[in-house]
Amino acid sequence: MGAALLSSIGGLVRGEVEIYEIFETVDMLDLWRQQPGTMRRGAQILKTLYDTLHLLHAFYEQLLKSPPPRTLRISLLTREVPVALHDAARYSRVRMLQKDGNPCLFTYRDPQTDQKFVAKIVRGLINGDVHSTWALAGYAPKLAAEPEVVAVDLDGPLILLRMEFLSTAVWRYPPELLDAEKPAALDAAKRALDVVHGLELPSGGTGVHGDLRAPNVLLRGDDSGVWHVVFLDCDWSGELGNARYPDLPNRSLQWPPGADWDELITQEHDRWQLEHAFAVRIALMHLFVQRRLTQTNNHV
View (cartoon, rainbow, N blue to C red):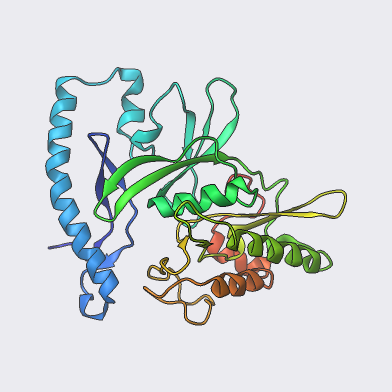
């Protein structure tokens, strides 16, 4: 094939074709250097792309026969807004958020109350279970609705999570804390992590996070000196003993000893990452958050 890089595939959503950039880019000119997991991803992309082109053809043939009203055409056909968020009775002012290049994170308003929420598409039921369980205990953004299966592809279901919007005007990342605040805040974060590590998932096991870097930990101190902690971005999370690392996105960053592609995620890894999250300086955090810390819409 002519292209050197391959990254986008399609998924099937309620009988309609939807585009998600959910797979990492595969360098087709350097396959012999790739890990087996990356090779498998490349094969999946090609197979799903082949299948999806047929689905796309049928979808647009039908669309031409009965096009949507003009006022809805842009929102229905734009790739920035998933089909799952097209219901105008439930979602208004849907916007994509850019956090670490994540294309599956959005804000929306409730049409009835105008309250702002976050919608995120995660892979697999177990990721949703970890978030749901931790949120119920107050250690992840509270869910605004039950997790909903919105797509299925070669790796299984994609789950839509709808959750509260946490403003960084109130919540802070570890590098934003004053040095005098960090010891108490770190102790609170460690206690919170111990609590969530002990929570039972619907499967009967306990959970691990796998990516507790500084952008995925938020803290808020109250007037009584108590620190409240939430853990964000459960994309890699899963059941202890089963959850494994994907290809690490940036090997120039520090990762826990033993963290590598297809290795088990452990609770010790989570504790190691949390400690290092409090050692990250703001200047370094800018490199992998990819936005100003003063923005108030990147919290999941």
